[in-house]
Image (tube, rainbow, N blue to C red; front, side):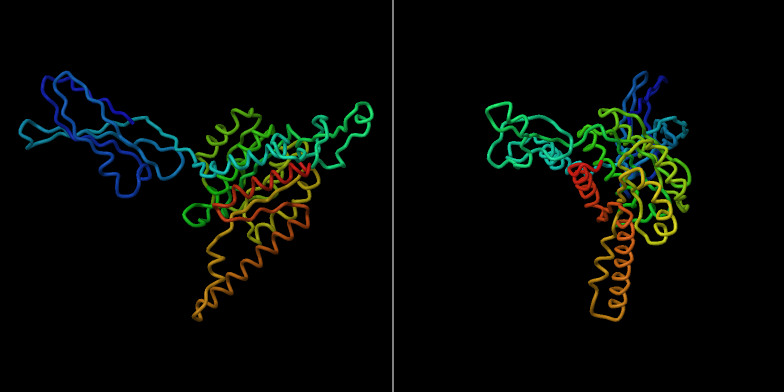
Length: 367
């Protein structure tokens, strides 16, 4: 941020200026140095000061005030005044999983049959006819087209395009839990951004609904070039709400956001109680009309607990970790029996795992 300090008096200005912002605008312990500036401005001149912000959290940052302390000629006395300023800086959510996008796009090109390997494009949507080459699947031979020409013709296929994907972010109390250094909600956002970038490049349409007891954010009807920036802006100010998510309302919001057959991706928790008491009774309404994926952030600390040994406390800790894993597997199995695809991965693995699940569904023609 730039400050323009103008001295309209007939005397030289010597001052200390503090450009105050919320504490999360800088790494801990660096705010004193970053927000304070010493300046000398001759009479009738101006100076530009730059405050470098390094926010540690996403969301809107509202400037507090600019305080000026000007010193007298001998430096023995000073006057101080503050000015309210209307500046706001929006910190966008990080897109750490962007590094996985090239490899997922390469896999997408293989599904489209746009690589030099001797395999047909996967999918269920007919693309074109071409001459047979050794290595092609003989089941792809088009015998009618072959009869009309002197060479063997095979059908090529591509994944379905222009499909609809609805991302549903659960912003209820379970999304506030921290896994490692980040809340579950932030890891879910990162996965949603990677899937949005991949699906938009694949020719599919992506919408977003963030919900707990009411709709917190919505992105709808954006084109391929606009959807990712719109998602980032909508997610920037989202915060977990310490309330139990209304599963009935969440299902209604998903059905309203997907009026025709779609891929509905629920980014929520796999905790037994919220799933069994909230989501499972409402799940049939979604699976009857849509393909449903449930993506959840797993806690690597639980895996570490199960390996604890060497003392009584460590054994109890291992037992607790094993019980938590068993409950999580049981919840995932219940969802799978309802036809739901479950993606359960650690924060750093959730985004690529969800992208892989999307590509697998696309290759199988289930979108």
